[in-house]
Amino acid sequence: MGMPVQFAKFLWPLPWTLLGLVAGLAGLLTGGRARRRGPVIEFYGGAVARLLARIPNRPMAMTLGHVIVGTSAAALDTVRRHELVHVRQYERWGPAFVPVYLFYSVRLWLAGKNAYRDNPFEIEAYRES
Ligand SMILES: [Zn+2]
Image (cartoon, rainbow, N blue to C red; front, top):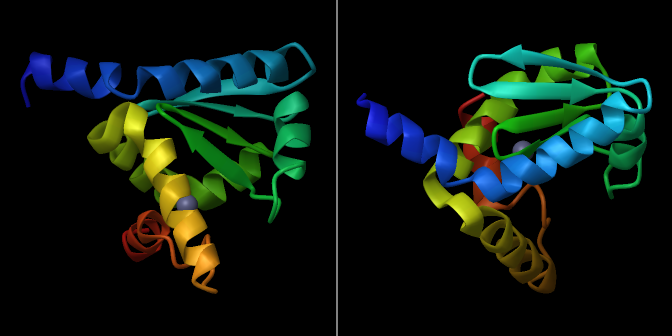
């Protein structure tokens, strides 16, 4: 793959990556840690773990562009393959990823389905991880 394509993949989801970096920085300032794994920076512990605990379903990790935030290093190891599918989804959808994801979730919820498990982005992530 050529450099321009690689660069576009990095640039396209950058707004969400920046949000992830802000969350990660808050984590670092409160005792959390960071590490690079392949195409992503992972943050875990500190305020990052407390933030995840406030989200419905209390996820072990969440992907924001090229950042994955997790409750702990072990949690990130458990869910990395799944979250890397979301990274590729961010590379495809860019700034639209989160709005489109939430649109599906609301539509599924209104239809009486599971807003998380029935979300096509999650179905793809569970199938490929
Ligand atoms: Zn997922």
